Figure 1 (cartoon, rainbow, N blue to C red):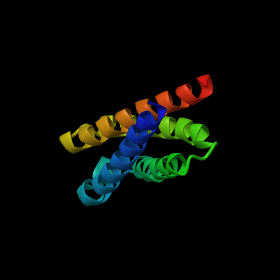
Figure 2 (figure 1 turned 90 degrees about the horizontal axis):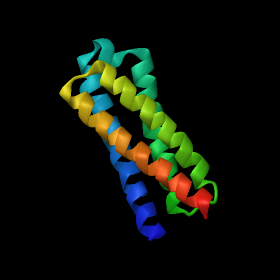
Figure 3 (figure 1 turned 30 degrees about the vertical axis):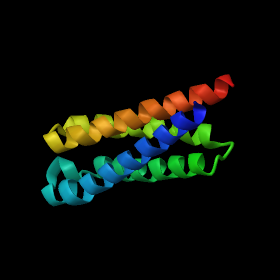
Length: 115
């Protein structure tokens, strides 16, 4: 069962990474204004990178993946808040993907700590 949870978490990390990258380059930067604000762009890039790192750590079964997943959850939650602050429909989809990834990464960390 742990393997299924791990695979789901990897999938959610990749989905979040993909959607954040697509949203940043296809929506935020072309739209400008608050969408292209320094904090928002930085947190989206942070989210893109940490989601990839978390997925990579889990895929190779690194014993440190729980630490990376905890950081990923924090970054994804911050990114979701930033997307919420902008508030359009595209940003809401991105925020939802970030929250799903954050929840899965938090659960993955708790499951491993309890073992």
